[in-house]
Length: 124
Image 1 (cartoon, helix red, strand yellow):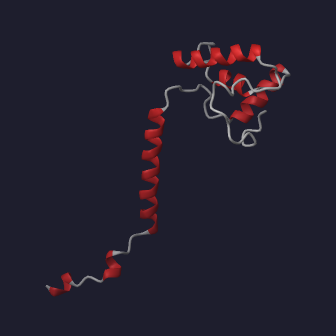
Image 2 (cartoon, one colour):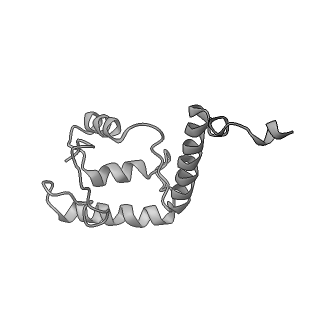
Image 3 (cartoon, rainbow, N blue to C red):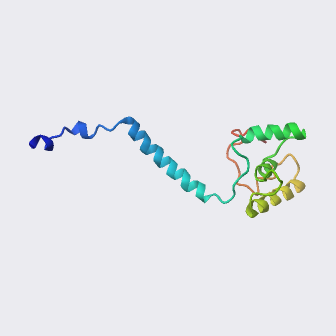
């Protein structure tokens, strides 16, 4: 019976690399779940990238798409209603600022949090 008590240490520590990956993946998934639960304003943009949606809107309208108008477009349903009341308040502020501020400035900046990297979206 002494053989059972003398299990080699490297056998106990031999955890498969795939198993370690699953633990990390599980941690990431749980963290993402917590972060998603904190979001109060959903979007109706689906899985389409913002850059692609912006280029489609630019082709349809023939104008450069600002971050504000892209935000409004992704937070409206197909029937034209907003996804919720909080999104409606934010979108109305953006639209109000777009009417006041010149087109060279970004009217979404005062309402939305400033972006640290504009090059990642490719939008003005």
